[in-house]
Figure 1 (spheres, rainbow, N blue to C red):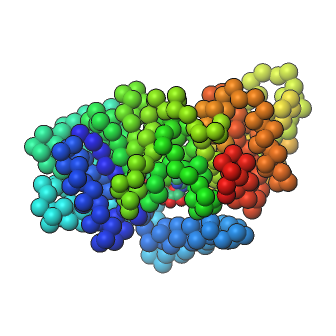
Figure 2: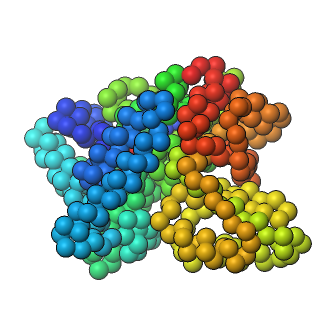
Figure 3: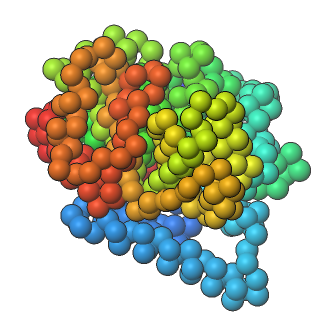
Length: 428
Ligand code: ADP
Ligand code: ASP
Ligand code: MG
């Protein structure tokens, strides 16, 4: 069997759903399981639309911060109008309707086209913890339930149509997996059902050398490794959820990223053997960026020669469940980046007990990714020469040595990405 996941734009209107139906019909012999996503809500759709328009307009990026803040204020105002603030559990219950409705539409449209489709509720299968808005699935339970509930349908030659992004706790309280979570749903189901491949149908030709909204000349990659895809996704390439590869690595199930408006284009295949694939004449595969980042600096002279300092520091982040993305450390100072500012205040208060703390917001992470980074000497100087004259902070290279990651001012991000693209791919 195969999994075919369709993102929001691939089910956006009647024409898109007709294309989707045709794509699945063409794969009927491969026993497809269809996973559909939707926009999380009208407000989010509105925010996203502003984000995407802003990306195409040099200088407009800072406006995105205002739009996001306004949207949050609007959400609070809306719930105040209902008499009180919506609880995260209630937000998840509301947000999940997009997927429940779109999957009904798609299942119906397939039946209308004479296909043996059957709507399947993912909620009793995708059992998660109760961290609303960013719930984590219990993989073992998901594996068992997916096999129990979905395999019989596939064996009956039916085409199940189910929902991405949403799940439920063991007590059947609805949850969501966080932005982009539908890709993760598809991967978990693909792993559970030992799929031949997991197809991610979206609005671009595949994984590209950069976000085409920033770099119009970006090229589509024929292949990438799981590791590269995960690094790119973690640092801003939203075409794939960062956790998508994780469930598929052990079984070596390929992920194929495809364009639902151009179903005949080959897309990008993400699989282990991509490690060996040549990347043309460039040592790198792709450049990603992520705005909305805050840098936290901690300077503590007593850190010199002391042990246990970093542990104490990271315990603060752990207690408040704040995710740290990039880390760089000197002798008596540490710089790290976070994306989520909502729980930052107590973190900073507690860190201040360890040393001097200062933060810098409106920053962006830029990440240059490629297996070719391993053992290509002189790349760092090429990268930083291309970045100039933008100011670079918090430089970091992971142990896997397939990415070079650093922080710039948010407003410099798009230009930095374009200059790097020009340097490594000869066009922007
Ligand atoms: P879907 O709704 O199908 O899940 P997303 O909006 O989540 O689609 O992801 C597709 C978008 O990802 C593209 O429109 C593109 O702008 C953006 N993107 C960012 N970086 C990349 C990249 N390196 N390659 C391809 N697309 C990228
Ligand atoms: N509505 C979901 C989201 O905003 C769809 C998806 O997971 O792709 O991410
Ligand atoms: Mg997506």
